[in-house]
Image: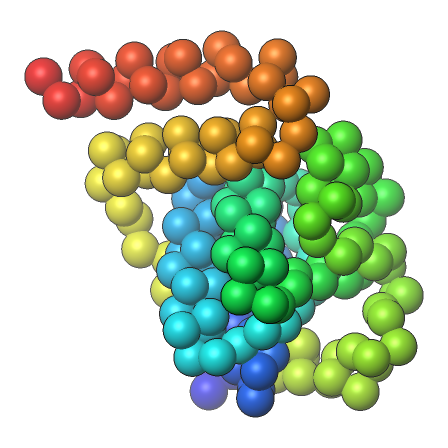
Length: 176
């Protein structure tokens, strides 16, 4: 059953393709669900992860770090992440953090030729429930995402050094 709601993650799997359509803001709250779907898709044999961001309003660094982690996992398994329908703003965000080095990025209405026949499947997806993870799990995910961003580009270290320090300190406080 396909739902047409104003925001969220919408997903589908067809053969070796995992599809995601993001509506609204991509953030640390929806990132863990994307990661879970990506890992489950990989276990099912998906080697191509296609993300449609036509209706994405913005993206935080945690979400971008999760995208980077998924891309690394897929690459290690012989697969790839392809993002289509990127606005100029989000395209620039991803390039600034170096994600264009590990993810194939395509601007609005310019999908790669090998995906054109698959694009109609992006319209027929199911809404994925995004559970509210506990604070500790969310913080751990945020740390991992930012560490991944630093791994893919050392230029990201000065951008996220303070964020990582804060998040790691927060994990210590939560452990007490």
